[in-house]
Image 1 (cartoon, rainbow over the protein chains, first blue to last red):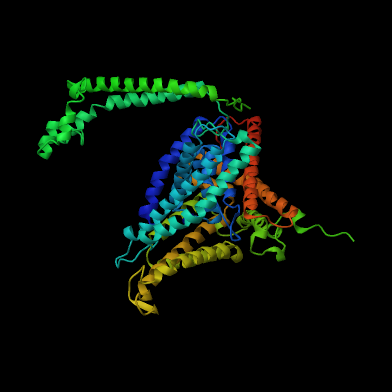
Image 2 (spheres, each protein chain N blue to C red; image 1 turned 45 degrees about the vertical axis):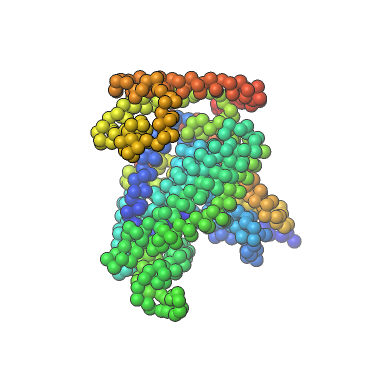
Length: 357
Length: 279
């Protein structure tokens, strides 16, 4: 998985660096915001940890051993943004001090193993583990599935990087300058080995480590993965402040989307596109297709919108957006109340204080 | 008669000690029985490499005299140059230059040979299919299989593979020369010349320092198992043990991180990043 120098063309490794720089910048902005706490040392040690878990020998049936990358494991333990930084640092030390993985391909390696792998795996873990309690089976199952998905996503990306080399970099005689294997060779080679073997190793490692920590020191498992770069493990902290910050961010996003809604008027008019695709009224369909399907004509009379075609233009659009969002929120809120009341009775989760040393 | 202290219990001060420590010569057999032993050997090898880098970096030599920032920028420029260079003669020239510089910088051949041989050999193995007409069409040099489908080594294939292996060899050599002649703190400090932010330089230096501690811990985790087991368990048990090893390494990481933080705070750490920008 560590791509050495010389395998990728400048047309590939320069864009990979280009993709990584804003991500590193974002991560370091997240870090410097909380520089006054203990994150720096834990991050440095987390990087050393990510380095070392790549060296553990994992037994495989048949008497041989393999190695895990551990990107998803670090993401679950430290959070995905911290994992991005920690794995990047581990890859940097491997490239600079041990010649493992290239210097020019460092950006590409980070993209695969420090971004795609932790984020894909962490997302899968979150989907499966959800808000399950610390001792739930969903925790380690989610971790295992996350490890499998994360590693295979990274392998797919690496296979794509290899496979496009002969397409984009060749000399005057058409001979490949870098990795000479095309997509039809590189993709199956990378994906098959990772789907069948290395992905399973990664899943076993990730799942078993989480299961071990569940049993031995559950306080290290961030059940409530709140902050993106939250290094401090916490158990089920129902942090009101944090919830409020999130709600406010969400509100701002919705407000921005509402403000943008008249774009739906402007853009089609600007490009002469007529109505949005698939949202034709029956007489527009008659114009486009030459006839109106009888079923559609029949259905046309079933529902008359209270504000047909949203009335007078941009301001009406905004108004409709606000009303629509409010309606959706109201319905969701009501449904949530109903469901939550059921859950609240079954919820036996314990709130432990967050670590404040 | 008192028996001598086993090799692996002695204090370890030189790279050779580390290489020798957990691996009594007869014990290095392939197979499941030695997984923990081999892993312990890998961690010891890591520590040995780090030690021998420090040692060659403090020898008097050509590259050791040059400022780390200049070396970092120079090495990176040469590596990028090597990836842009397409003539085999040019790449071979760069490779020869690396050898000359290594000789003048007193980098031991044995230290270089491992990486210098392993990476190009690995690349060469990967490149073998690329010399065939299936991947790289061209005029045949050596016909392996005449009938349908014809299988032959092509001149274009040899050219592609040769250029590829030579290029990876040049790049690895350049990185290795940089590593072997620069102490890690200077090396990471030198990255500032490439515009790497201070925070990352500090993180890298801290990581390198505690890599020692944690690699030692990882080695001990494996040695503890080696010295307590008479036979290996099933794959399942071994996997569970390995996961427990990783888990306990993480617990140590976490505890050490908190202690380091407290030590930093008690020495006046306020969140500001300062580097020792000497030389």
